[in-house]
Length: 396
Image 1 (cartoon, rainbow, N blue to C red):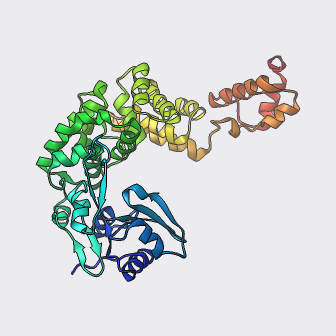
Image 2: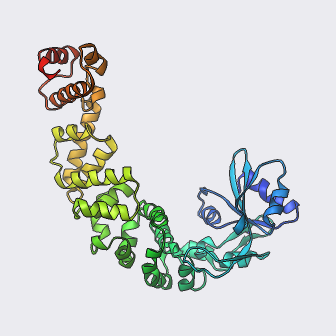
């Protein structure tokens, strides 16, 4: 019998439910991660107990009815929150998102049969060991993603599983079984039926995967639905010299588009306003950044170090040698502590206020001084800047 190590709190939850007479399991992704000898990000517990019975098992701690319609409650322990869900069968899916109705079940295999992929359709009960009715452990061993049962049915039930499959492949490095891949290609067009916010959540996780380029190159049908303006091209080639950074990768996909179209695409995908602005900034620099120490200083005066580094990576994504040179320039600037921002000026806003500058005039003088320092026209020394300001009284 397979033994899987469980944290103390998870053991407590399972033991309490079992002592109350309810068979209970850890299920899904946490079992997959344990078998891969990784620490699960979260824990899902399934039990034959109904929600009100789960609440009765834990009178000493808060139990919140977070998803009572689908049999889910959250047990709040001092160390964290744990989802506990009643075993169930799903009815028909009418909107490509969720079942119209569910039926609670006392059978773990029935519960696992409604899950998306075999590697996520395993359960573990300390008393019985691993429950794996669909061969998830074998698929996990060989690094294969395969739908549970009929792939067309699984993906039409919840179309977001199309992106979840690609995301798992991109992050875990697993291959997608041929029949599951065909189902993905057939279901891809239905992604347009989903709320863009749900699509964006999975899209961002997918872009962060180390193998995202290979996966998206294999499934251009999905990309034609999400980004028809940007197809066709090779994601692997485009991202060859870029890190697995969702912000940077999305910027690279939009680099060949005009700013109006870039904005339309990002708005359609429901990117938040601030993120949208950052991507548009990166795209502008990716086309126009001239390189060199002076240009980097100017860029640092209007953006964060992280986004300036991204701009360099994007601008020279097809020239790794020049990319490396510019990154060295950037690191030298940071190591020296070059004055690139208003807060770096040796003459502060308080100093200028004491000299009689107010409102827009104060800001204009600060910007003028910063530009002069960045361009090498003035040394960033308090007395030098003070003398310069006093001699330029016309700016007041």
